[in-house]
Amino acid sequence: MFQEMAVFTGNAHRGLAEAICKHLEMPLGDCEVFEFANEEVFVRYLDNIRERDVFIIQPIVSPVNTRLMELMIMIDAAKRASAGRITAVVPYYAYGRSDKKDQPRVPVTARLVANFIEVAGADRVLTMDMHAGQIQGFFNIPLDELTAFPLLAEHFRKLNLPAPVVVAADVGRAKLAREIAGRIDGDIAIVDKKRDGNTDSASALTMIGEVEGRDCLIIDDEVLTGGTIGSAVSLLRSRGARSVRLAFVHPVLASKAFSLLDITADVDEIVYTDTLPLIHGSFKNVPTTVLSVAPLIGDAMHRIHTGGSVGALFR
Image (cartoon, rainbow, N blue to C red; front, side):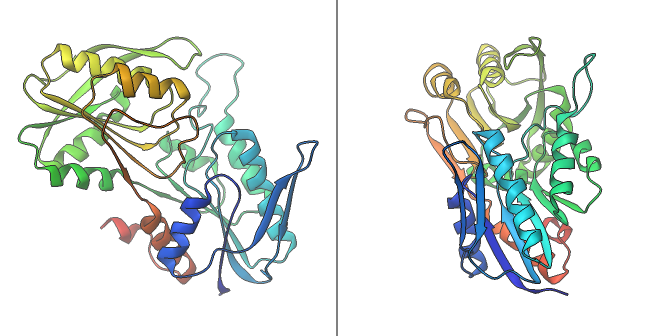
């Protein structure tokens, strides 16, 4: 249907794009993406992409609005360079928390970002573990959503913990916790939390499930300030948990999250993927494990290019 693949990236996470291309055994395309002195973004493809199957890898990471604008302009530039098909590969979809009107006179920004990507000229989207499943329905173009939770589950299955309990960071993650618990032969517990208005902070109120003397694994899709996770860790320790480990897909991680999780919180291990680079700090005291999603994304891109089944990756 199209000529050979061409893979490009902006300035969001070049390391991930290079790892994906290494897995695909192909070079990363040559493209200029920079800002002028007035903060306007300029894009120029240095390779011929006429009628090629173009994949643009760009997680929407800090500075969020700049990276989002880079993605829009890269898509538009590819369209005007006569690309055969354009797939926006967005490992982390920002504004995913703004997925509904839960207050009067507020936007649904996740839908607005979807409109941006479509109008810019993308033919399809490849993403990973969106904050809310209904965001898939905001697109009128094909969207494939990958998940890294099986990678996280496999990591903890290999630890052979004697009495694992998968802890959902909130009620909405109960189904996910049950699925991961089934993979590692464990039980589940649920933390009930309350968010404080329109702030980044939330507090854990109570917990459903028994964790005394158990090895606990707290799961979530992303961590920003670490406030919810920190409260959950304190709650688990007060209930007699033997060990507490954290697992999340997207390390958004504001600077305050490192001081909280690396110093204050009593955590045995932190596990996350490389969908995003650590921009605001690093973990120095807590053992960390970084799982690469490059092979998974690379395989999905190859299947999209060849017309294969992306869903088969998870069967």
